Amino acid sequence: MSTPEHLLPPPPACPCVVLIGMAGAGKSTVGMALAQTLGWAFMDSDYLMEALYADRLQSVTDALSKEAFLDLEAVVLGSIRVQRTVIATGGSAVYRPQAMAHLATLGPVVFLDVPLETIEERIARNPDRGLAIAPGQTLADIFYEREALYNHYATLRCDARQKTPQQCARWIAEHLPPLPGLPTA
Image (cartoon, rainbow, N blue to C red; front, side, top):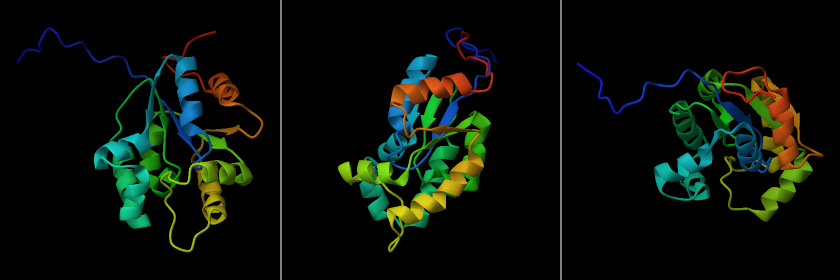
């Protein structure tokens, strides 16, 4: 069986950069800036969830139990097969080890570390963002619960407290381990 001539051979393996952190940490904004800095594509897993359900993420989280949502998110994350892409994950990605194991195979995992007070302010400005939270849990509860998981899974931690998204993107680009496909200085 011959390969059609119009198909290109697959490119050489080139990793991704995966961003983790709380909802409101700036993963999408920093991710877009980092993708532009690296000359790579950008992907937001929250948008994949919305596309799958043809609905806003908050509606999806409202319709499912927290556990069902986390299971669905893990399936979506596990299906990602891309290269040269900055991937912004949902803040709850760290609850499923199998999802994080897959993401780690794609490339370095970067934790955008932002203080709780900043997260609270940002979420208050956009209360309809999808947030995987169980009945009775507070934002502070999940912040501290996830903080240990973010640190556990991160290859690199970006302290984003005093940095703009562009500064975070530059800092991450400068501190990534050597990877095929990264621009050279």
